[in-house]
Amino acid sequence: MVEASTTAEQAGALVWRLDRCGRIKVGSEVHKELFCRMLLGTFDPYKPAIIDWPELSGDELDRLTGLPFWSLAIKTEGLTAQRMQSFADTIEDPLIREAVVLNAFEERRHKQVLHNMIRFYGIEIDPEPEYVSPTNPEAAFIQTGYGECFDSFFAFGLFKIAKDSGYFTPALVETFEPVIQEEARHILFFINWLRYMQKNRLIVMRPAIVGRRFAAIATKVWNRLSLARGGDGTNNAQIARKGHQAMGIDLSPRSFLELCLAENERRLSAYDPRLLQPRVMPRLVRLAMPMLKKK
Ligand SMILES: [Fe+2]
Ligand SMILES: [Fe+2]
Image 1 (cartoon, rainbow, N blue to C red):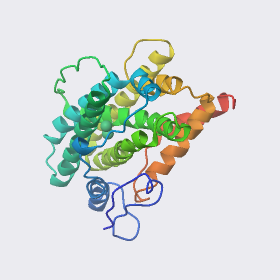
Image 2: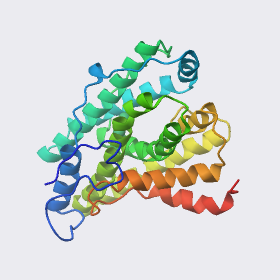
Image 3: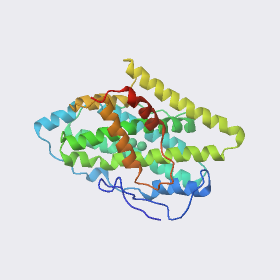
Image 4: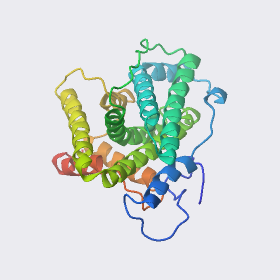
């Protein structure tokens, strides 16, 4: 098995592949090995406490503290971590449980990175809510997994903009590279787990998981539509919309979506090509693309 950490330089090149040749049948034991070992084998052991936050100039500090999404980002990571851990506690399969426990750990670590940054730069955020355990941990996990697929799609594009625009010092941007690449691993794991479970549930149970998939997708689409109508839904679409504006980037919606598509492909292509890839967002975006002006 090839195991490697995913750094900025490596993202885009193949950094992990299961050491086994040939086709892998979706839903098989080898498929389970593939998606679980991908997550476990690419773990990056960085420690938030020893991150060396760069000193920022007055302007840079103002731009960072002025970004509108820090409270929402911390809340999202906290909620995601709690839902993943709640689901992990119910899983009987030791390998899948180990992988979901790691996923929950990484979400808690994302929150820790954000907390440390906020403390270091004196950014003010709203008080964190109390995270309530879900009554149906599997349904909550599916909802969260789709949420990560939607949000990561835009986050990959925004991160590329932040990196190339010079809006923030490269040292600060690079600090978040492992966090962003971890989300790519999470959504790959989630999509493969979902298909594996669908294949392995008793036929009578399959409609339940299919129903949860559609419920999760419908909820996400509804939230996005609410935002488009000017509703006050609080989710990460705001990160894409406001973050893009706040960074002062003059980019057409179509160019932004093209960038998101390219980054999505680049980041996900770093892992074994036999893994199933998240398809909902790229398909929706490709459908919408011809309706958007180039400039
Ligand atoms: Fe996260
Ligand atoms: Fe995640």
